Amino acid sequence: MGNFDLSALALKAVCPGNDLLYDDKGLPSVMVYVPKFKISDVITGGSNSVHPAFIINGTEVDGIWISKYQNIVKGGRAYSLPCEDPGTNITFDSARQACEAKGEGWHLMTLAEFKAIALWCKKHGIAPKGNNNYGKDSEDSTYDGIPTTYGTGADAGKIFHIATGSGPISYSHDGTLSGIWDLNGNVTEWQGGARLVHGELQILANNNAADADNSQAANSAQWKAIDGTDGSLITPNGFGTTTNSLKLDYVSSAWKWITGTISSSADSSRNCAFASVTADNTVCAAAQELLYTLGLLPDSSTATDYHGDALYANNAAEERLFSAGGHYSNGASAGVFYLGGSNTRSYSDGHVGFRAAFVNLPSA
Image 1 (cartoon, rainbow, N blue to C red):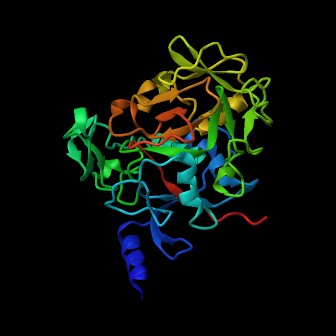
Image 2 (image 1 turned 180 degrees about the vertical axis):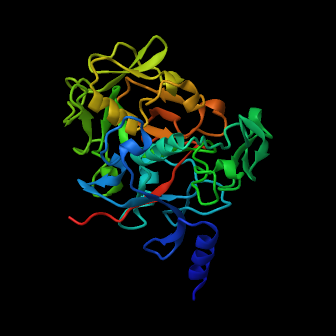
Image 3 (image 1 turned 135 degrees about the horizontal axis):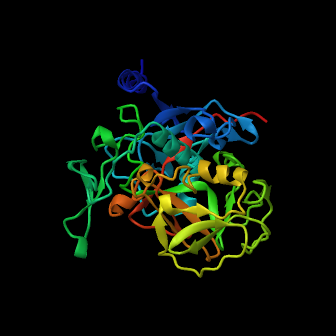
């Protein structure tokens, strides 16, 4: 039995539901299996349809594999390994390419996948903690992880990153050793399959972004707007003004999904508590459910369900991509329902990282 086989056996003995998955170079990543579930399994009153994270190219998949740890890059490929300084200073496209380079089925974690897990956490009464307050969690200063990166200048001596998976068990998504680590804080994570264009929400259908053959380039025809009056996917006009499309407006200091014309101007610093995000009465139930499944609209009116997590966005710029989870200095606004929608695809910084996922793609 080889060393990797022994490692996989030891991993499964301690963490059932985890496994070592190997890329096209034969190198392992520690992954967590998330089995398929229905929208009604995670959203009270939701439909019995399968959550879109488990539908790829029109076909349901049994489950998806999520990196247990925030990723690093070695040899141009993404890896999920414990006790590493998470990879940062990476653009959206570079993060996506590092994931897709690993072989068929590997991809940058998508918004549909991340928020499916967030909804699962909420349904099970779990609010994963993490490094969102310079090495500790803003709600629990007792525990911390192993520091790997410190600030400089005015931030000298402050802990920025902690080693992947080095925090306490409360940093796990399900509160067990088998869980996914650091979905709250440390570094905010690029998300595939969704973007804003002049404030208009555009997505790849269901979880089609999990298939690298479905282009996420800026000019890809795979990007679709959402008709807020019936929930269908429609071809965007390229200007963010597609008739009836879902658009993000800023009204009375809070984000609101509308189907008409955006009234607010561009401001990348605009934000509100995720619990305060609303939808106009012109947005139909089907469109609202899609927003719920993508973690873009709270499915509960109870603010404490979201633990202060925030939504940041720029709703007038030409294109903005999403990142999720928050980072080491976001404090209480970080968490599994945190979402940032203010960065261009070419943006990179020391607080932005990523996470790969894997799926056995359905055959054509």
